[in-house]
Amino acid sequence: MTKNDSVSASDDQTLRNWTRNMSLWYVCDNAACRRARACRGNVDHCFGRNVQRVPQEVREWFLMLGELQRDQVPFDEAWARLDKTPVGEAFHQWHTSTNAPRGTGGSGAAPDRVSR
Image (cartoon, rainbow, N blue to C red):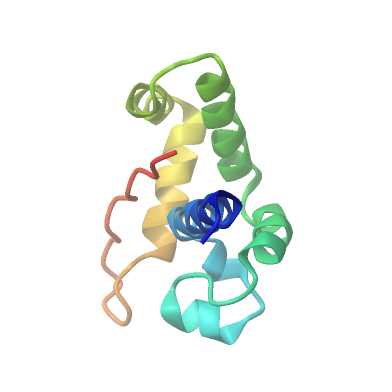
């Protein structure tokens, strides 16, 4: 494996983690993704298409997280800051509603923090 292959695999896994944490599988056309509650296709293609299908506040949360990261705010601190905002609340509502245990109507687990 070359260094480029390793970076590519790392980027692929990071995108897969984001598709899971942002519940992009929920809006995906691929039934395999919805059943698995995770990306089962071409993650590069699916992320770009499906991120446009989630609520605007969820997209704003993701963009704000990226802006904080560019400003050198540590990842966990950036996430915690966003938790206290309306977009943070919208993200958690989206995640909870899309990750409710099947057939129970209960609340879903809190999203895992995706490492960069």
